[in-house]
Length: 194
Image 1 (cartoon, rainbow, N blue to C red):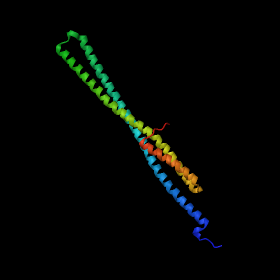
Image 2 (cartoon, one colour; image 1 turned 60 degrees about the horizontal axis):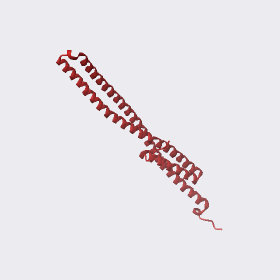
Image 3 (spheres, rainbow, N blue to C red; image 1 turned 90 degrees about the horizontal axis):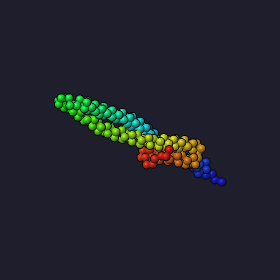
Image 4 (cartoon, one colour; image 1 turned 45 degrees about the horizontal axis):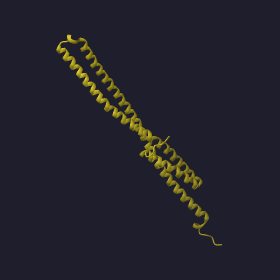
């Protein structure tokens, strides 16, 4: 029986198929690694933004508290001036009474100013808390995506060694789930229940 050309021999065909499979898996694994790098960057940025927003919100709430304290100080100062004026009553000279009224009015103006300013500070603090909460919602998506993509890379690598197409398909499922979680981390389309 005549011998088949080397390119058509079963061993050569199998070896060519294995090389094709190995190349395909290797290229796919490189794509997994790129998605993993993007996921890692997103997770790192989400955590940094969360921590920064928390720190800034804490600063704003401390500033708010300072405004509230000053508001109360001016309110108390005004009340003390008012009580002092009441205690002195009719014995007070008109120019002293006018001075008491002037001080009381300045205290009232400062109290109003601090009241208005604290509302702006509170809005900023709540906005920063909202940014922090968004970061906290994003972070688990990136964490789980990183794990799934790392598992996908390992499964794809093992599929090359074992020449297992089933293991490669499994790695593709892990990578797809990881990529979806990464995308959700950036867009927050779905809130994770855990």
